[in-house]
Image (cartoon, rainbow, N blue to C red):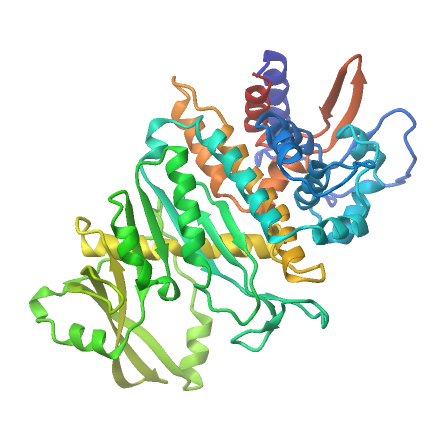
Length: 509
């Protein structure tokens, strides 16, 4: 980072801290919002844009070779008049990064002269053209685009330290995408009565990257096509340099016909939920009591100062007062036994959690209910409670799916058939992967600040999409062209700008 930029950031931080100083409140005899006689004018020379961070994202896409790779390998347009394939793909991702929530929001960017100049674009595709581009995709073309993204992510991984490659954790899950359309090819009615699609999402838990998205009809089971995508993701992780891979999924993904094949590779481990079938429950009930161990879950967070007094549980009071049936977890115990599924030739480790749940009505205890949760794994080394906690960590993918649904808005169906909506999902989800690659490229040089830089890197990888956009994309900037340079001049300070300029400096190097 340049010394002049560093001084300006320090001065900006000092000014805002002076304003927020609680010991210097100023005149408290009148409200804080005192602006009057406000007028609006149109600037002639000064030009600005609200999403100034999009320039850094574009530099990132160019530096990691994403733009050239798309144009070299994805061939959907017979002539480029005037757009190339990369223009279309990035148009979807940039729309999401600039807080666009649907195809129609592309029109806002298309009519923003400063936004176009900021990206060096004479024009960008309109929403109708963008939809037509989605309809050009075949299944093979979507696979090509996913392969391009995989090659780019491997290049980004190559810059990471050796510890990064110790183990990759691949999570998988399906989610429902509801649509109110009546003419969308491939849509169907799901198990909960909603109409739409049922995409499968595979992600890398280490970085929260989306490894694969496969769109499917709404009535398809969660695990359909998952084994094929797992094999594909395994190949990518091993090609990228990971030494081991852990596969995780819920009960729908315990695909027993594939377990022997994955187990044959010593680099592959798996932990899958398993349905509590009567024969398994019977085996668990027959285990001697001495093999059960109390399951102690770690605290969700560490209190650094003093623990706050918990507020009253209003919902609990209503449930008791109105004598609704209420279930309380009393205790958990964990045990294990060997088990060979019918479709397997090998025997695996089955870890079982026994939950003792009291069923109450009002203040009366009705009865105790015993519930079992099973996890099948080929990990014979870890303690049983470690297997359970690792399986529970897969819940972080639920947060990722929530981000793709409500933050990036990638898991929607704005086009008219299954494959075109699949292409839309993949291209829009690129916005989330660009966020992950942004975090991975942040340097963490050795020295006195290494721990701080490493913590900032982890923070960028974990934050929600909206928080990332607010911190690094929604930066008001003045656009200035000086000679051969296109300068984004930041017009406001936020506390995340030191991280922003560290990335910009890394990209320039």
